[in-house]
Image (cartoon, rainbow, N blue to C red):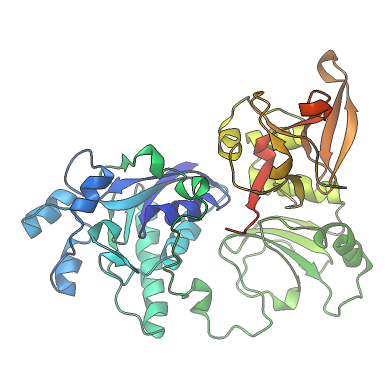
Length: 418
């Protein structure tokens, strides 16, 4: 199901970047919410960024109220806060994991500020659109308050209410840190994590990460499972994908909800928010693993999956192309394996509507003849995951090849790590 939820956690540039990097999030838009005046601009919210006054009880009386009700209580204008709209597929990322992430990325005990960003336009806020989101918001707030208190933090002052109105911010604020990679992106997190909830976790225990992850069940005594060693050699040793992959004996798993028996080694689990989504007992080939990972990460009905496994083609000038065409220096990597495929140093603008490069990274792609659609072309595939990437033509600049590559099967990693 496609849902949307709205978060305020300080400057929306960094909050937008945070949620855009979560698998299952479809789109993130920066904007303004929570105020009682129409059509706010960035200048409006800056000009109205006055700290709220009053005691903590005064703050509590406004939580959950509409902007109009808060204005009646305060007898004053209510400013908007910098907010991001997060549109997500709840079959790929849970509402709970998104809300937990929200609590963890900022300090919800700071009133009308995050770090050096001071003003009521930087206040912590969560605006829900469904009853389930509301229930999860309050449940996780209570859980996180317990964790914060144990670490010496004060009371959570986050504004919590149903969304009334969201006003998208000006275009130059959208994807700001992608367009300005050295821009302001502070870390206001407290360092407190939901993984701290159990003090009984042993040092070597494996506990859920609270998002998508892959767990490979291995033997209790290392080196005693030949199939595990083969899987390690062919798959896990080369894997650099964004979904974490961990290997563990079954006895070390704590807090997971698994349906598949763990006696077989290897057993590969695809996990979301601590719960089994899919599992396979026994050895998997590299092709089988990445096919399953493609469904898990991309979704079987997604454009990226169609390109990767059905030899599909992006629409020219698609959204992902527009995002990737002017990135800073860095590497384009396989969306599943995480292996580097193309360098921005070899990128050029072909005006074709697809990403174009004069060469790939050595030994990371291979070629095959493609006779589809009555044509003879040379297809480019990833060595690591075997997904379809695009085609290579002989019409590049200065007599060089043109590697015509689909953007939806790539991810971008800046060279400086920002």
